[in-house]
Length: 100
Image (cartoon, rainbow, N blue to C red):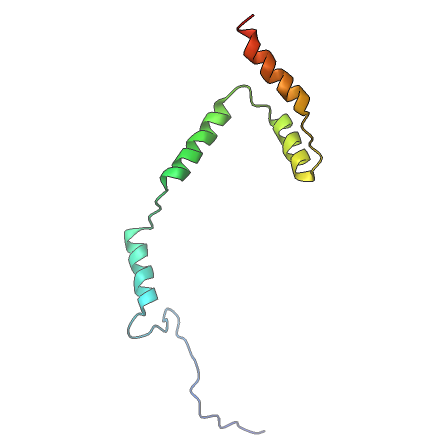
């Protein structure tokens, strides 16, 4: 039997004992402070506006999720075509409905 005479110290940890540096690093100090004071999230005005718009859309009774999903998929696939004549006819019809 041969005994290895390695001169490096063994890394032995006692239960409940943690190896910690003598002085915390800047990152550790910042993390410790964040834990003590709590994290803070600040939303921009734009994100608040988007959230409000989402709430209003979800409350609207005329949103047809199936139709929106279908149109979204067709636009993404490049198969959605707009009938320009139908759009123009609709605009003209709505414009003249109040006049006639």
